[in-house]
Image (cartoon, rainbow, N blue to C red; front, side):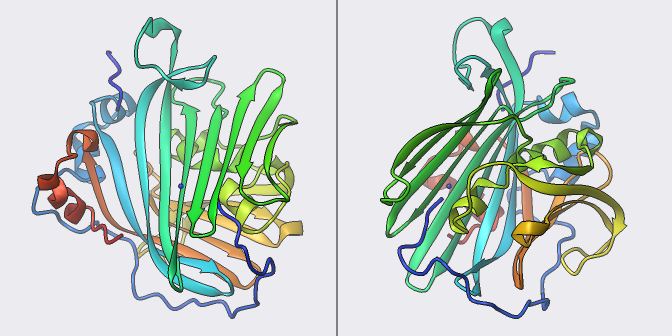
Length: 318
């Protein structure tokens, strides 16, 4: 089959987070996404028509899902939104960039995730995006590259990790004096940011148990943690109930006991393993994201002023 190519900032103020009571009140739960007047296919309807992995992911479209975000920051929860954009594309393993020309036999098919979130803290916004590139159909499914950026009104931070034969190559650019511009090496370790695509490819590829893992890059920067592998325990749970989803789902959970952090990603148990919600608990502070809208679309072709209706179809507010 021809395979068609289908925002981290530190705050300039206090580096300690206030203790807040965990808020478990939620008026919104994830279920069937809101209907669109454009009649765009949803992941559910698309997967009924194209039930195989190749049929679903290699038809020249991306999957876009909008989530209602409640982001913990400065001891409070801040309303915002998150969007997960999954798409397959050809990836050149050497330079680790998208193949745009040349011999296609030198390219590797990856499932790319652009994980975007935006929220306000008082007057100013945070904008984050993390991109990850994970081999779509190989025995070695380790994520090859993760890049993450965060912008707020104090400035920018950008971090990138490239997996190569001799280890993990790290590049950091920051306007903060203590960070500055850095290049370093890390030992081989799984990347938390790669778990999202592994869920979508095949959750059985995710190994459980204790291991060293590099936490999500947005967490590293926002919480001022060392960028290195940390002890973690990964588990998978079937038929779990949560206040974020209106029916039992499966879950992947990562616990960093010494960091006091836990991430749980809630997904459907059957292909295409739709991610319905997630939560990140750091001490008593809880971040949640709940699915509200989802479409399958070639969004890169809808870039004119008249295409704003597509934003409405995805329920975007920011």
